[in-house]
Image 1 (tube, rainbow, N blue to C red):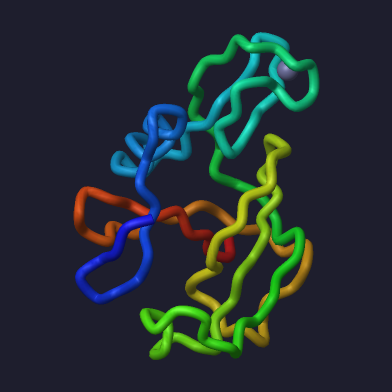
Image 2: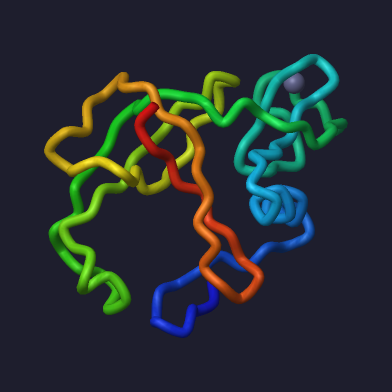
Length: 136
Ligand SMILES: [Zn+2]
């Protein structure tokens, strides 16, 4: 993790995740897929379903649904003081993988498990774009 000018931690891509973050910069959700068609996210050496070491990076739909969520009232990092309470949402992509992100464009008390969402992208500076989700 690194820090943005306003003090929030941001991810630092490594070799394994670099294609994902390059896709983010183009506002595309690009994730790993094994030759048998299993999607994997986050990046991992082996397919969690068939253990294949082979993969390609492919564009996913960006569509999914809320699998679960939590509302964070406690500020665990000073960069989030102005945002609490904020949501941390687990989205299940239509392709299968689950990803933890913030849901934007909706009040916390309107979030519901199962609601359809779509990927959205936040350019945060420093050549980094973060994945968020928004209601469809
Ligand atoms: Zn597989």
